[in-house]
Each structure stands twice: as structure tokens, then as C-alpha cells.
Amino acid sequence: MFKGFMDHWVPTRDNLTTFWKQDLPTVLTQLDELKRDVDYNHFTFYTKWITNGIKSNLPFMHNHPKASNVKTDNQWGNAIIDHLHKQGCSVGAMMQLMIFEQPEWGDGMEIGQWDVPGGGTAEPVKVADFTHEDYPTRLAAIIREHLKLFPGLDYLFLEFEGLDHAGDVSGPYKRWAEAQGKPPLDQVSYDDETLAYCRILDVPLGVLWSREVREMLKYYYARNMDAADAVLKEMNFRGKVGIVYHLYEYEAFIYPDVIKDRMHWWLLPWHYWTFRPGTKQIQDQRKLVGKDLLKQWKDAGHSVCYIGDATIGAIRGDRESIPQFYEHCEDLELEGYLGMGNPDPRLGLRWNSVSDQDCLDARELYARLYGKR
Image (cartoon, rainbow, N blue to C red; front, top):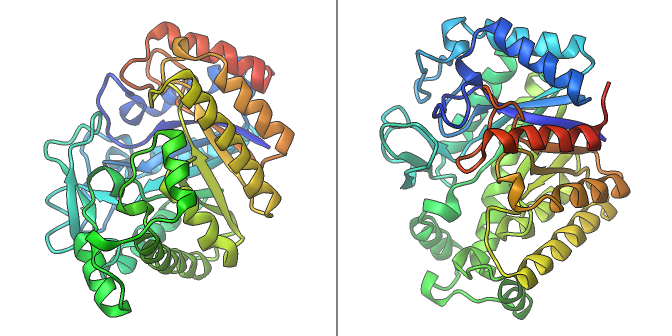
């Protein structure tokens, strides 16, 4: 099981991380110091999140002048990959491919706008119309460019978050329903198991949980994953590819089905237990369900990497869940465990409510979990 952390190559507000704009000696020193304290063997970087963190030649991607990759023509990122490889660590790129910056993304291929906290963009980002006929072409172009510019990458982790936050599926669903003979959006149906599941976990029941919308999502998600696979084959990528989604929300009942015919794809479910409030009874139920889903996916033959909290939720709010889920992942012999965040109070990735002391506490906790050199 690889044991890793995450930080941003993408421009982000300074209170969350400054890793993305530091010079190379500074970030290499930080990674080495963390390695001395916590024996991680993997690091993943957001190369495309709300913003773009590489120097891109694609017309629909925005290059940020303060980003270290832009300033160095991507030499910065490649040097980080080489350095981590010399330390015996694998390296992944995580790409959020549902949301894009204005004005580069253009008009006519969006289904909403999202003002993301912490994104650091002057305008809300656009939620891409993942059903558009041109979307797979853009998706393929982003992946192709990443593999060309950063040939040392060992993992590609793709994420399509945003639909449940700010996406409006009414237009795509209307076209789908008319073509497939499905009912209109206000007449979609829900199975009893889904209704009970959402009630027990206190999850809002929206159309994304319906039978008909779920069927549509499976079709287009499969189409887009096939477009990604075609590029991986074209570029002779020898690493691993995976899909990132929330542990127990609606995508947890879509992607595992989609990749039954694509078992080379890893599943990367995530959750940070201080992020979503609930009574102790509800939280305990969510944890039971989350652990059971991880076991189900592993037992079904999937390669699974759990993305848990490091410095995203305030560790003082829940110290128990991190080791509980890490130990559960070890017991299941998952392929990986990825701690979201970089426990360094000076420049590492953290979220809004996380203090310097929280970062230090997380560093100490992960030293116990991952071990020390």
C-alpha cells in the first residue's frame, strides 16, 4: 500500500497553500524535511484543480504568471518528480476536469458556474457540459499534454467534481430523455434502497440519485473514460489511472459500475470527516457505510486507494477517524492511502479552519501511521 500526501501545483489562495509558487530549492527542502519526519512513499499534486497549475499550450486553459511551472516552462514540476523518484517515492497528478476558468473555456459548453471557496479566481468557474460532443476531445487534449510535458508521472487521478455543487443537468437530461424515451426530469423515479440510504445517512435526495439520471451519467462517464483510455494507449502510458469521487455520495453508485469493464482503473474514494456535520449517530452510520463500501469494492476485485484527511479538516475536531480508516485500509490491503494535505505550517496545503498547530498535530499523527525513516 503506498502512503502519500498531496499539495497544489495550481494557483490557490495564500492561506491555503503557497507551495505552487515557491522556488525549487524551497519545495525540495520541505519535501525532504517531511520525509525525514514521516516516511511517505508517494506524493500526488493537483496539476489541474479550480485553476491550472502547468504551463499549457491549450487555448482553453489559463496560464497563471505566478505559478512556478509557468515561470520555468514546467521545469519546476519535472524536477520535483525526478527528486521524489530518487527518494524512492512515486508521483501522481490529480486533475479536476469538470470545472474550468473563464474566459478561456469559452461559451456553449457549460451547465453552470461555481464560485469555489479557496479557488482564488476573479470570476466563478464554469461547470463543463460533460455530455457535449466536443468534451471528450478537450479531455483527451489535457491528458495528452500532461503526459507529454511530465513523462515521469506514475499515476493519473481524474476527478469530475462540481455537478452536485453547481451543475444543472436539466438541459443534458432533456436531450437524453427525448432520445431514450425516458420521463421528464420532474418525473424521474427512485428505488426504495436509495431512498432509505439517503435518509439514514442524511444525504439530500436530488435528481442525481434517480434511476434515470444515474443511467445517463453512467453512459457519459463511460464515454469520457474511454476517451481518456484512448490517449493513455496513444501515449504508451505505463502507469496507473484512477477515478476520484466522494466515498458515499451519488458517484459511489456510478463509477464502480462503470469500471466493471475497465478494471485497470483505480477507485479513489475520499472523505474528510469534519467537513460534513451530523449527529454522532449519523456520523457513525456514515463511517460504517464507508468502511463497508471500501470492503465491497476491494472484494469485487477493484484496485482502491482511499483519500483521507491530513490537513483539510481541523484535526482537533476528530482525531479518531484518521487512524480508524487508515488501519481499515491496511486490513483490507488496499493499493493506496492518500492523506489530503501537506502537514507543513509554513507552506503546505491546508483548508480554511486548519491552524498551524493542526498541521503539526497531523504531522505527528502521520509519523505514527506511516512510520519514520
